[in-house]
Amino acid sequence: MREAEGIRLNVYVLTRRFFALWGLLPALAFGGECETVSTESDLQDAVSEVEAAWKAMDSERVDAAANRARTVVECVGEAISPEGVASFFRVRGYAEYLAGDIPAAELSLLAARRIQPRYLLPEDLVAENHPMRQMYLTLAYRPTAVREPLPRPALGVLVVDGSSPATSTPIERPYVFQHVDDAGSVMTSGVYAAGSRPTYVEYTPPVFVDVVQPNAVGLRHRHTSRTLFIAGLGAVVAGTASMITSAQLERDWRSRPECADPEACRGLIRANQAFGIGGIAVTASGAALGVGAVAVGRW
Image 1 (cartoon, rainbow, N blue to C red):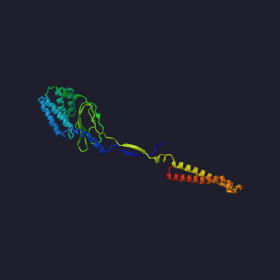
Image 2 (tube, rainbow, N blue to C red):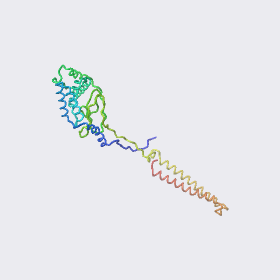
Image 3 (cartoon, helix red, strand yellow):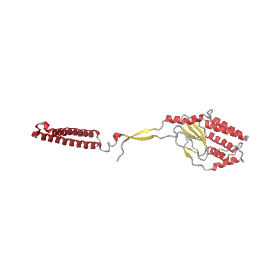
Image 4 (tube, rainbow, N blue to C red):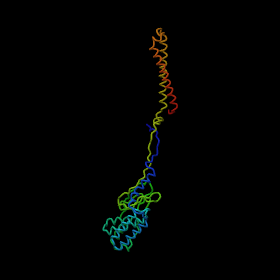
């Protein structure tokens, strides 16, 4: 049996304006922890401070400047360039190495190396025979892992490690994720651990809903006009038979002498009237069904 006809309605689950407001919520919530909106220039200042403290082997200054660099990344009001992200991960690796967290330092330096593969550590910062330089050089031979795909955002573009539009994130190392709106303003910015997934409002495709029209069910494919015509024809036949029966009853009671007085044959007369009136009504109904069949025009 063929499916009934329907109307396809294009129903959007959420409007673009709602997505915009929703997408701003993470930024607004985090904005309470940021005293000012940072720039990439602020990040470079923090990077320079880490490098200066590293030369002096001042672990406290290195740690403080590295934390400031992370705060800048999380409060930045613009998309950071790949070079800026790479420099952030390098000085973060310095701080982690100096603090004795070698595995974390290795991951941070791996992130910097993946973003800027041709960059070499300055010898005035890291001596040629320094263990961290050897670590950094060997990271170039580590195989690249499969990346995690990112769903399309409902608004704006995604930026990962300074590159946009981003469609995936690394799972082997930390990364910087930013969600930028159509005007270029950063809604979300942060440093994410290896294997973690950022949170943002994802794009929801249009949902198509089939709405069945009650009046359309079966009208075209079930030969409704034919059904109406047959029903109407049957009603006309039945009505005609009823009227013939009424005529025969009338002849019967009029031919009887005892029916000269109508009161004596009241029952027969009433039956005659009932068949006559009923026959007329049924015939009229059949005619109406026939007209309806022609009007519908679905044979």
